[in-house]
Amino acid sequence: MVKMKAISSFAALAALGLVAAGCGGSDDANVEGSNGGDSGESATVEFMHLWPQGSSAEHHRIVNEIIEDFEAENSNITIDMQVLSNEQYKDQMTVLSSSNQLPDVGMTWAAGYLDPFVNGNQFAPLNELLEEEGLRDDFVAGTLEAYEKDGETYGLPLELNTVYVYYNQAIFDEHGLEAPETYDELEEVINTLDENNVEPIALGNRDRWTGSMWYMYFADRIGGEDALNSAIDRSGSFEDPALVEAAAKVQELVQNDSFVSGFNGLADEEAKSMFMNDQAAMYMIATWDLPNYTTNEDVPQEFRDNVGYFKFPTVDGEGDKDSFVGGPGVGLFVSENSDVQDEAKQFASYFVNEWGERAVSEAGVIPATVVDGEELELPDMYVEVLEDLNQATNLTLYADVQMSASVAQTHLDLIQSLFGLEITPEEFAERHEEALSQE
Image (cartoon, rainbow, N blue to C red):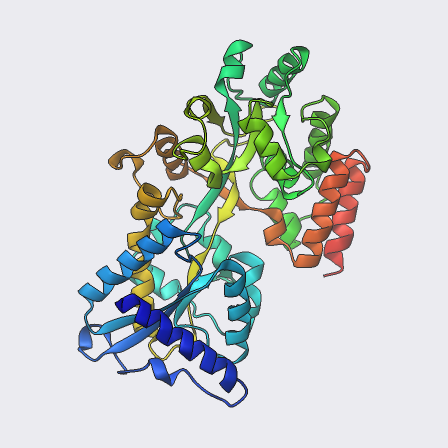
């Protein structure tokens, strides 16, 4: 009941903020004392998140528990919480930022989503917090970087998704196959499945980001972890021979009948359904799907028992299998305009520290912070993935997330054309260069 009152009061404040926008209102209402924390003076920290009880019950419960624990340990600080659904949240961020009334702590996405808030001086730099609290080493390699602009960190990532190839062990066993370590071995697996009339790889490339993940892994393995990032940030080029070769490998897979029939017209959900109904042997997806292969009781136990995964193979002897494609999900920001910024940072730091183990053990979320899976009661696949992350050498953020909206659209369209054999690898590279040069 206490939390419900808190939600209501912040919602009312936010609504008032909408009415008062343009009247020069400030967020003084959240200041009950200028210096909370250990000083003994009270402070209220506004916190807005996007995990409603209805659609994200476990996330919602864990957030409430963390807040209760924080308030118990910091009796002079009250967390005034507002909860919105995903799309409502994005709309509210736009509205509140237009009147400089962002909550003291809120959730943000990485990369391009940060730009207007950072450029508008609405998110506080968090480098000092990371160093003073010793937080920096708690994060999986590559996750904080997704929240950096010009050397400053503006978000503390909470979630992390990395991309693997999942496979049906029963189908592999039936045809005497093992998880491939190299691209040559992957080709052998595909050839064997094709010869036995088994669809090798489920792919729903109507959504295009699904195909982008295949291209990104080839780029990483052939060109190294910096090749694609450099092309996007303009310190390199999409016409780098390694990136052209990566595009050629994609078309090689297509020409070898590696993907299910009609893959360029299928949605990801349709491809997922084929994999989960034993109609295809392999499926590339991020770790947000782990519950389907482990704990989701709606998925038949027999199928879950038969799912394994492998890291993307090396290609022609090149590549680091501990380098992943993926990205952090949402992270926490602290408002630059907060009147209780010290307390807001204190809460954000506490939240990140508490979120990791609870998120993975109670909600099945892979956190962006390093967690020792051996110390938790988790399905084996979770333990193995957490161990992978602890050993990760790099995380390359999804290409379309790194790019501006217009270039991302071009990239995704070109991905579908590449998989559809409608353009050559050279044209694929050239058109990326054209799009990026117009930024």
